[in-house]
Length: 284
Image 1 (cartoon, rainbow, N blue to C red):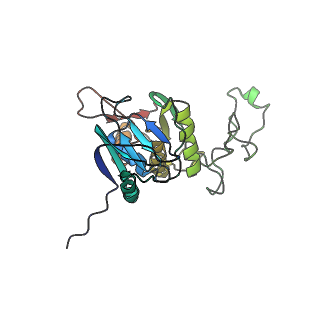
Image 2: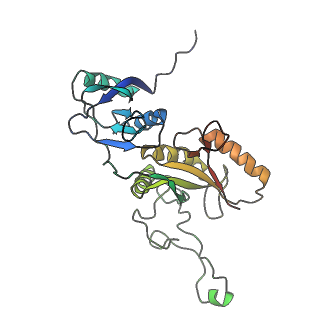
């Protein structure tokens, strides 16, 4: 017999909105498709009981409303709602008027991110105990270009955790970019700053700059973290040894296959294209 079909990630309810349950909160994220809206809710099971995708006539139109608790179901033409599969029972109870309970959602940001605002983001910082050692926080001292001036300063490298290779000491301390808590904090900070797109410094798999370790394995987790806050990510292909037009083309093929289908990957419309295309930055 054929293998059983995988369980649905969420279920759709057409022409349906929800009131908030007792103590509930809601968060609105613009710029997502209906499917991306449901994916965002699915990835935030601890704070999303259902997501409602507004109609074209609503204000704002085609927006994702993530709700932490559910009250009563309302008939609203053109509106779609979805619940993660694990919470279908909760949603059914709410439809009968029984308030559902869940962890409160994050505070609503009245401004939200702008996808016209891009910021470069470097996920190459490492520190114990998440990583084997410090990387990039222990950067070598950068010498002055004038040898006479350089001779007045010591040589060596920074020594974390007190002495960091940074002009400023981060509020999170010498964090690890691989720490999920760090990813979450950075996405929240980006959203509150109105940043819509993080341009992620990227090297091909199994490669890195001379001061770090490969960061390509972090991309899936960063995309998931970005999705929860309505942030988009695109890759910034850094210079690397023996980089060529042919190798960059290979890099793009890899990245598009691996990451461009993720709902948090930044895409833009282009004349003549049938759908928005993934965005990449390439350093010359």
